[in-house]
Image (tube, rainbow over all chains, first blue to last red; front, side, top):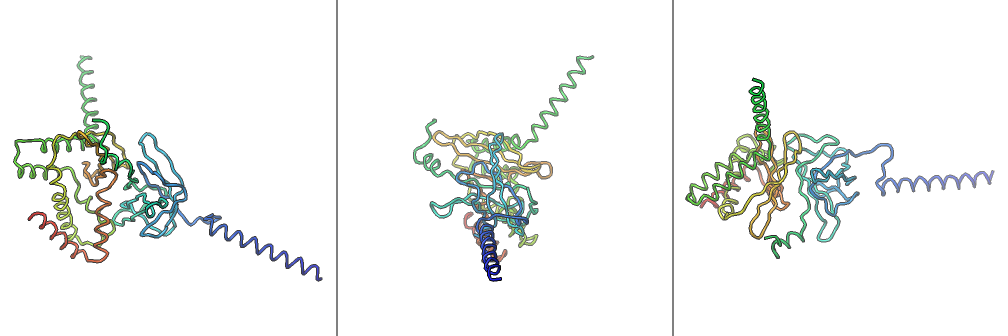
Amino acid sequence: MKKYSKETVVGIFVVAGLVCIGYMTIKLGNVGILDDDTYALNARFNRVTGLREGNPVNMLGLEIGRVANFKMVQDEQAVIVEMRINKGIKIYDDALAAIKIEGLIGDRYMDIAPGGAGELLKPGETITETQSPTDLNELIGKYAFGDVKK
Amino acid sequence: MIKGAAAVIIGIVICVATSAHADEPLTIIETRVDRIVKILGDKSLEEDAKVKQLEKAADETFDYIYLSRMTLGRNWLKLDDGQRSEFVDLYRLLLEKNYMGQLLKYTDEKVVFAKQTMLSEKKAEVDSNIVSSDKKIPITYRLIRRDGDWKVYDLVIEGVSLVSNYRTQFNDILSRQTPAEMLAILRKKVSEKSG
C-alpha cells in the first residue's frame, strides 16, 4: 500500500511537471496547438530591410500580431509580408503599414495605422498603402556627397 | 478588296490597342505630369497665370476627395457631409500653398517614368524619378480608378508617403479637438499662407 502511494505521488508530480512545461512552451514560445487565435493578412512593400520573421506587428503602440513569412515577387520588385494578426483586431483597406525601428538601434517592427473609413480586410487580403523603410545611408549620401552620375 | 479589309482590321486593332494603352495608369499620369512640366517651363507665362494653370492641372491629376478620406482614415467617419466637403477644399488649398512655392522653383528637371504595378483592380502604383544635374529623386504615384478615370491619391517621395505624413498630424489634432475645431485650424492656416 505504501509503495503504491509513493509511486502514485511521484507519477502525479511528473505529470504536473510535464503540464507546466507544456503550458510555458505554449505561452512563452507563441506555439499554437488546436485553436489558432490569429488570422493572416499581407502587406506589400518595395523593400523590407531589417524586418525578420517573428518581429512584432503593432497598432497604437500595442502588439497585435507577428510577422510570419516573406514572399518575393521579383517581376514587380516587391515583397509580400505575411502577418498573423490576433483575431478580433479589425484592419481596413485604408490602413497604413510602415516598417519602423524601435528607438535608434532597436529591432524592426511593423506599425499599422488601422484606417476605418474603408472596407474591412478579410483574412488573406493585402494592405497596399505601405511605407518601406528609408535607407538612411543612401539618403545622407545622396544629399551630402551628390550623385556620381552627372 | 482583301487588302482593304485587312487594312481596316489592322487599323481597328491599332485603335483598340492604343486606346487600351491610353487608359493605363502609367500613360495617364505621364500625360498629366508632362502637361504640368510644360506649364512650369513656359517662360512666357506670368506667375499668377502659371499658378492658375497649375491649379487646374492639379485638379485633373488628383482625386482630392479620396486623398482626403485616406488622410483622415477612421477620423473621416467623425465628419458630417458638410465638414467633409469643407475639409476636402481646405486640404487642397493647404497642399497647394505648401508645395506651389517649391514647384515654381522648377528649372529644367526631367521626370522619367519607370513602371506601373497594379495593386488591385482599382488601385495602381507608378514609379518615376525626378532627374536634375546633381540629384535623382524617386517619386511613386498611387492612383485610384473612379468613374473610369485614374487619379492620384498619394505621393511617396523618397519613401515618405504624403497621406501617412498628414494622417499622423490630423490624428493628433482630432485626438484632442473636435472636427469643427480642426476645420477652424485649417481655415486659419490656409488664410495665413495666402496673406
